[in-house]
Length: 205
Image (tube, rainbow, N blue to C red; front, side):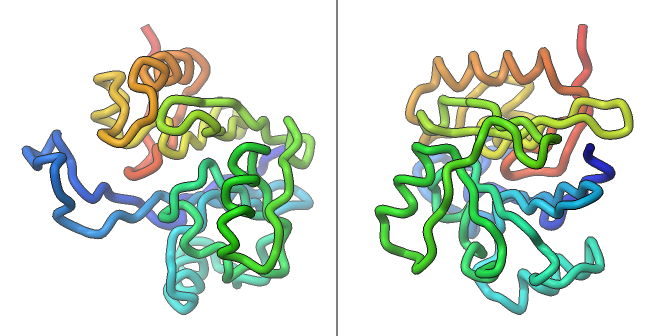
């Protein structure tokens, strides 16, 4: 059972077509949205976003009152570096990702610790959902909290604008698949946490 969830960092894109910015070059550093999911016996951090340890610690404390050591597990939605920039700050936690993602990050040799293959359900409360398109092995998390279906989407949904347009980011591996994934998420989510924006309400027809 999920008791609560908190956005730790609100992400931003390196370039945003909906702000009139060209997709040809970055205009700012990218930051991904990082989320903490809390149950009675677990604290699960999704996509640790801050490369500097002091910054990651400060953001986690500011938003949740927790220390880095209080996190039990870390889940990565996909292999892009901005979504595991702060992974090394949680050596005590279990590192989890879908098999495809775990293999890619493990093979990179960036970490001395292995990322484990995530089961379909985490802590008997959080569902690991395939959400391909941005990358082919991308996975999101879905859970129920306070009677609402919440999806932590990672880059399956970049921002609220990309969601509204059913559009993948410029570097998506498969744009048609990304659009279909967004449509599927729209049918199951009451609230959605995108990869580079604040969470938002999904208004169903």
